[in-house]
Length: 188
Image 1 (cartoon, one colour):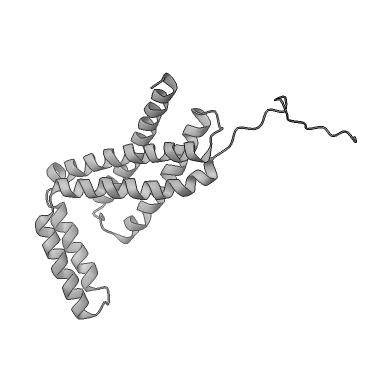
Image 2 (image 1 turned 180 degrees about the vertical axis):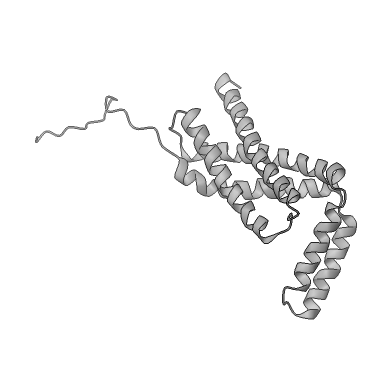
């Protein structure tokens, strides 16, 4: 790896840390407000996902790559940023569920059960889903929750990167002085 490649990885890690910190701060704010499962939080999470990735990727493009980048390069940078943010958030979620709020997994499944019971689904289907939820709760650990958060953040970050890269790519302009390029016509 040359210095340019290493510095792109380092910058991706830095921007991923900023992006991951935005997820963590948002999660803690809603936790301290006693609303970690509220509908407002469920609306804020995708906004952070989309806006955070767009802003960090755009900032990296403008300040680190000097503004010009292909779609493929922008996509790979955005995926790297998502990966590092997902790793940071997964690590945070493990610490959170192990030390800060050991009852989080129980609260998560209890709230999910209440939402499912009040969803208006047919009773037989809701009962079946509640049974499945109870089985999942028995297997849930802080590590399994951290892994699922890591995978989810990385997966959805990659999906969002597919779209944000469309808007963020800026191909390098052609050099008007390169050989074979003529911007002047004979009949002026």
